[in-house]
Length: 459
Picture (cartoon, rainbow, N blue to C red):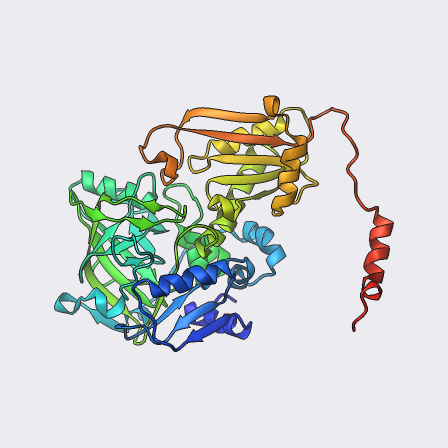
């Protein structure tokens, strides 16, 4: 049965021993960010801050962490089942169910009662950031022409008690909808939702085609529909059991300075003139939990989330369109879970690995990839490096594609021009006589496994 809300999931995390409470006063200016960096680096637990300086509510951070264990908990499956369970459930979309009363509207703030500082802590994550940021909110909007829903995550810089700067960058779906509204001289209505069943956060990161609704995917992943409620001031429906909802409008033909901000690439994203969200209502639970996440160089839980969701979707795409014998595909955390891909293949013909490379590299967000044989564990970087070192013929097996659109947050893409990409075919050349791989034979392996405790008896 799906988690009803963030609180049910946190209770499960606590039962597993992976939740800690921090009662010492912590400063939202840099200190929370420093704790987040340390937790990510040490594969630490989820935490609840119960004493945040200048903020009356509890702050939650690190619900997924930097291993796949708590993502598996969110999906209610074993860690080694994640990819198969995800692919099975993601094939079904389930429409949300509308309800009349919702915990997320226990408190409603309108007009002069709208003060972001009452419900949002001023967390400045890194010293160079342009201001305090909301980093882990679900951004809801509809296409102004088709009313197709969208649920994503975008960074939001606090710019006063009723205003936020939004990093909306085409071809992000929220940016596409906003630009369409702007051409119609209309604001884009939005709802910014903080703290839900964590599966919604995972679903929001799946690269679905424009017009497909991530909230319906979340219903499929949960195995039951998400309950939603109508917003108070905008024509949108939001998860009924959310902790905090900020209703508002992205103003047409208005741009204000947003940034800089420490991004998932591990580098500072520059400041620029960007769209502005005007808040029209705040609704929340009586004692809301504020959910946030640290952003920066890998690993962070952002990378953990993206690794699963992007790997599953690209795996299915490549397997269906290019290589039915594809065995596995993985976005490593060190590649920012976006720019670099490793895939394994049971090769059946010459050149097949290069077909896979070209299909992967056509994705605008991907900069490089490695394709290996099925005997390589693609989640083991040592094995992947070994395949590159011993199976790549540089003159024949390195594919370079020039003058192609690349990821806009790549620090080498700051000028917005065309980029280049590369792929390594690290498979054994088809039909080439190749030395036999040295491995322990099966009978010896079983013998050693059976006698392992006798080799190292307990003292």
